[in-house]
Length: 478
Image (cartoon, rainbow, N blue to C red; front, side):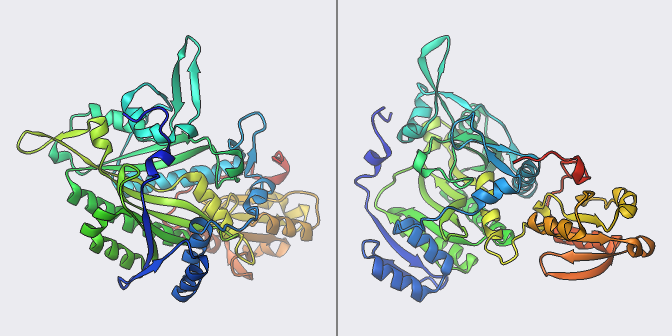
């Protein structure tokens, strides 16, 4: 058992790391992080801007000292706000912001359950700190826990989970597992808590309450664990590419493990077709022997971990998670941890990616309003009021402002498609539509507009508009 006083610093103080860049052709380019100028020169020669941003910000500890612009945008766009009656790093989500959250949650569910065929469970938020298995796994993180005292038992200490592992591993310990069930993929959407320090908090990038869509694969042995690791890695690599978010690839691996499995890392770097930062550790400092991180790059060129895959060679033994092999004997599992990435961090990264563009916009599938209808005058209002497009989020600006002000408002809200409807449009059924992404104005029928929007959202989840269709009927959340 890890003692109460042992911290993460105690665990890692004797571990030595070496670092290099792994290129898709299998070359290792050494990096001495103690020589910043040399590292910067190597990064320029490698020529990967996202990797350069990661190494400078996170490894050389030279982050840009700028506030991420998404902090102001999430509030001005009535998406997310600070809750003064809660602890710092705990947020309120307004209707439009909660719609985006739920769409990202649906997206994660689709990946985990429909694509990976994982089995979904749910487990408690609160755990007994005297439980030896919880303490063994989480002891070095205790300074980051929220702690809770039970009113009837003030001598007992509980912690709020920092990840979904605690409850899932207890579930799996009590399960009867056969070799026929393996590999077994489990999914949990786990609200989690970490007490980040005040100076570390930063909008949706670094907060104290967040939601983790985690996939854990329980495997027979290292070989099967690696197979799951590689499949998850490839899918998460594809996922990051499809998201449009700029990212860097990072690996961390124990030296003895790297010596045996270097070829697998090469294969994964080749798959991503981008150079990767690699840290090789002299010994284990966590439960994993190898992990990778897809590090999102924000508009300030700072970074945040999104998806991760980790090959766990320790926790099955800690929790007593066994399976019965074909010879009838009980054997311990290898666990492949992975997370699609916290919903809040994806939210943050997508907002930040939008802010890199000259004309910012969210992906159409995440835009709270996908089509804004603007009547030229009150005469067209009844026509617009009943103008719907099935499977598309449509609203109507029925205010008293001038047409130019309504168009400006739609632009400020990053509306992807804005259709102006006057007498001519009512008579012909042809709309003058401004497309934000291209900056073009085109003439489209309602069916053509529907096809255009649905093409942009193909393969993504859909939810209806969370607010009244008419802007005049909406409260303001600022």
